[in-house]
Length: 424
Image (cartoon, rainbow, N blue to C red; front, side):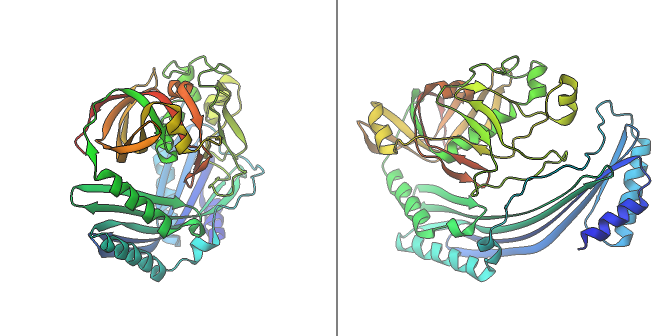
């Protein structure tokens, strides 16, 4: 694919008043396995070209997946035809102009060099390890390479290249089932022995399962569980929704909405994380402080709303929460009893204006008492308000990679609100 050819074609043939063109190309490999057998390997490149055009404030767009002349011609014509028929858009904004973009490195050489044969070998090693435990393992080993470009009539031009590697394993032995997964931009950080040992330890702990009634109790939230809550919490921190009175952060800028042990940033300074150089509006990524020692300092806001309220547009492109130096073993000694939470899932909004969420635990819940893990318990449903939860943080562990977009600590939180048992 020749990006210069696409750009030249659009600039030459598009007659609209304004336009933005997005081009993405991906190369994916996915080795799937189930019940100790490899089931399939999916691979192949994909491309998508999207042109958004405007006649005045009337907008239209079209996407194609081939870069030949016929498809580009179809894309330009269709986008323009739709724009001519569209109603006026009261929130229309001109395409972004030229701007300096940060230098980032989102693609890891080790991930690029990973071969399908190596991926199959990783899966086979996972299966062999499960067999030694007289168990079955299922999951997926995956590699994704993505290149993206964006250019506009007003002079914006940007590109990015990123990589991700992932390996997930769900172990099943008799009635016990649990999961461990790894996802990062750099394959070099992956250690199968480490992850499988963690998987086996979780499975061993889950053999001794006790019934546990829902209640408010101290919890140790591991980084992957915290990330699930942060995605939803930052979604509710949207500046426009808050200014319109729809979130708990209405009128709360520069106020202590969070606990003083909690800070949240988007950063370009953590090489283990992906940090896109720009977003879909052509807004350059930059160091951003969202919460500082409990005080709400900024909220994500798009270009149109920023213009209305007279602030600077900002976007949350990754999440960094500084940690402390408290180990899990030390956390277990700080409270009489509690639960260790690996992950959450099926999170939904209960009350957007209050910031309340509900969801369920997954991948094993461990009960501890007097500084020691005693046994596993059933999964539970929670109702919590994440920003209020941060006021009950008792201790923080070291920040660690939770995903390609998040470096987060383990948290010890008091009085986490569980409201029901779940059967899965």
